[in-house]
Image (cartoon, rainbow, N blue to C red; front, side, top):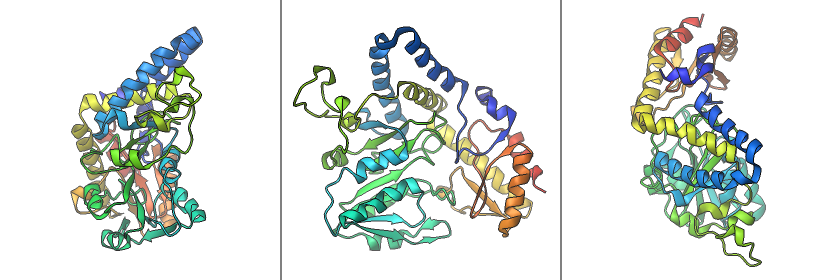
Length: 367
């Protein structure tokens, strides 16, 4: 059974992947193997780690419908977004279009561009989603970036990224995929995503401190590395005085990579690929739908779209009273049900390792 790979899922009813995902024993073992190798062989292990990191680019590309040459490793979502924010040649009067309630990782870096005279145009939110008609109205000839999450963390709303791409014109489409990748099917190239930025520690069920960006060819042409180092170049071990930047997305990686984190990321993605991307999505969406049905039957208001194409693994419910929601969250936590409290209500986020018994216990615990 899948949950045998996740001891944490046996100790608790873990429905909090949208905050921090559990790692599997396979991820733990992959990270530990790299560290054991470091202990035993030091620099002699470096070539093996480099080869493994290159293979993992292909694993990432398979997961998100992209290309290995266009994958760059990052520390987290914020550093990935910063590659775009700091990589464009901004001019006074340029603008960025972004939903008003984006997660800070996909909002704060754009606000910092005001010092260059860049206007931040906020798309109004309605019922937990950005109004796409208004988004289109805000885009003009001076829009350099349209930034949005694949899944809105405050509501669980899943955006139609290909439809948004059609509205972007010449602007780069930058997508925070952290609340989607590893659970929902993403096809970066087919959807026209110019920069798909993902942190591994949520739905990817990977380690902390590792993530990636997948760039389109167009983004690769427009962006300049904001930080360059010895690994940014085509031939790092030549130690040239005037080096040539790597032709691949590796040009955006400045220094020594996180070998242990990459190994853990590879192990996490491999489970998804073994199960099948669409199978994982169906399990996640099925678990979320079952939670919705049971919560609704208990008389609770579930803030989730009636359109299946707009649904994700996030399920937020409320009593309509924030104090009562907080009390329910405290009660669930005390009973060993891991979930989050957000402004809109209590947030459940199940993954593929959750069982029907988990879902039943979580809802039955609410008094």
